[in-house]
Structures are given as C-alpha cells and as structure tokens.
Length: 398
Image 1 (cartoon, helix red, strand yellow):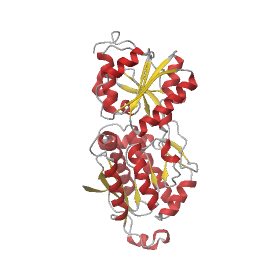
Image 2: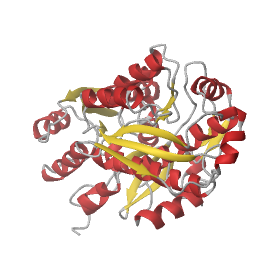
Image 3: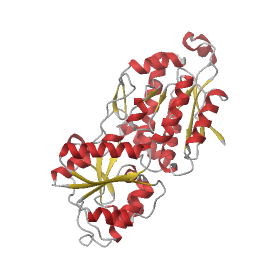
Image 4: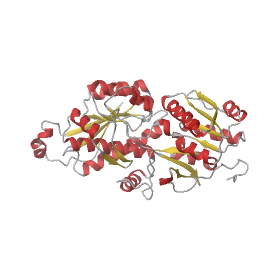
C-alpha cells in the first residue's frame, strides 16, 4: 500500500545539520506524508496534487532542501475512501512518524482527517477542501487557502443576473462540498434577486439525469447551477443536449475545471461556466511564481497544470515558508508561525484569521473554443462571456 517518493538528492552537509541549533538532533531528511486518491472517483484531481507535491520537493531539494535537510515525501493511496484515509493518516503519524502531513483531496475526506490532525497537533494545509464548515468546528491545526465552496457559484450568478436570468434550478450530489456549494448558490441567488425554482441533491453515483432535467424544464428554469464533480457534470450536459433542453446558463463546479471535461465532451462543452481556484496564465494571473511553476510543471508532466495542481503547489509553498520562518521543524512552533504570518504563493496573498481561514476569491471561466477563458471577476477577465448560451440546434454540428 505504501509508496515512498524520495524527491531529489541530499545537498545539505552533515556538519551544517549538526551545527544548527534550531534543528539539532533531527534526522537527515524531513518527511512530509499524505494520503492521496490515486485510485477511485477522485483520482483525476488528486493525481495533479501528487504531481505538484513531487515537483515542489524536487525543486526544494535542488535548491538545498528545507532548513538544509532533504525533503522526503511519503505518499499513500486512500482509494478515494474516507475510512481508508483516516487509517492512513493515523499510520503516517503514529507508525511512520512523519514530520509534517500534506492534505488529501475532497472536503469529505479532509473533514474526517482533520480530527486526526487535531488529536496529534500536526499543522496541515488543506488544498483539497473548500467547505467552510470544516473550519467552523473549532479546529486549530488545519489551514485554509482556497475560495470556499459557498462562493463557487458567485461569479456565474452575477453573470446570469447581468443577462436577465430570472429562474434558477440548483442541483448537486449529496456530499459535503456539493451541499456547501448549494447553500452558497441559494444565498447568492436570493441576494441577486434570482428566483430559485428547484433545489435537489442526488446520490453520488447517479448517472441518469433524464427525470431531473425534465423536472427542471417543467419548472421553467433558464439556468442550472450544478454543484457537481466530473462524471455527473459530463452526464448532465450530454443529456441536456440529447433532450434538447435549452438554457441561458449552465454552471458547474469541479467538473468543468478538469481538462478532460472539454476534451471528452468536445463541442458539447462549449459555453459551460465553471469555477477555478487558479489558472496557468501568467499574463493574467501575475502572482509570484506562476510563470515558473507553469513552465516547470508542463516540462515535467507534458501538460499545463490546472487549478488542482496549482492549489497543491501553493500549499507546499506556504507550509515550507512557515517552516523556514519558524527556523525549526518543531511542529508547535511552525503551527504558531503559520497562524500569525503573512506570505504569498501562486494564489496570491495568504494570511489566516483566528479560525484558520484565508480570504480568497477564485475565478469563473467559460469554455470557449475548447479552452477555459476567465470571464469573472472583471479584474482578471480575459474576455466577456458568450451568454446566453446558443440553443443546441443553433450550434455547429462539429
């Protein structure tokens, strides 16, 4: 089950290690352990987490490591299963005795793992979690960096308001992230004066949405907010076309942000709105390190990074910066440093409040000509959105 990736070569001399009072007595390598969904329903985004973790460790080791020590990764497969992840983090901490832990993917799994983190007082960045409720339980050792789920549909609903959308149906799978995103969408719709005509959660493995889409049509919705992942978002868009149900706006969450969404659906994916935490566009996103990371990731893995890769890389930037600022591998001192420091990553400025929450907005994009184009907020927009969506019959056939 266990796989260990040793990133790079040991560049720090033993003499420097022995002389450093802040880490005197520490072993040669500093270990960072985590359970990622290498298999199962979250394998696609979690695989990009792993890529970024490995890339960052290699870069750090090439530059001398962390506080002069080699960074070693201990990564395991949680199989996209919450109970498996809980057991693996317990093992990483109590048996493998890793120095620091890296966050898993998904709000559901992170919420469960957070209990382990609190018990053993391990500071952990949570790039794979955006459900605010995780930080509303009084936890102190888990740190947020990403936009929260409640704001994923904020940009899409603002754009819908601008083109005169009156009635919206809000749907999503019955999981923690999707429910949080649903609640936020309801709040934003009401704030903007858009009538919510249907709210419905569906089972996580549902693939046939015919009845639900027909119900939405019967309610007269001119927009669907889909708080979905990949498979369900693909199925919904494909079935909308098959049923010839036309909308002014279709807005997804996680699914459209994955590169394979546009490639798998082809022209059917056109005009769909989605949410992104970050985009590999240094000409638009001018945060420190964006260009260097984008270039290095593409050179290493043959594809541009998407936002899942970006937030994982940012998590590593922030955590290691906290270690360096603390000047020690003592977790309690690193935790105290993270709680009080301000730094920046490829996502931009990072500083948390007393609950461990960072203030971050995120991006809304539209798929145009097979590519994700940022359309909101205005300060990052590459183009104006093409809305309302053209009817299925009005679109090119290929």
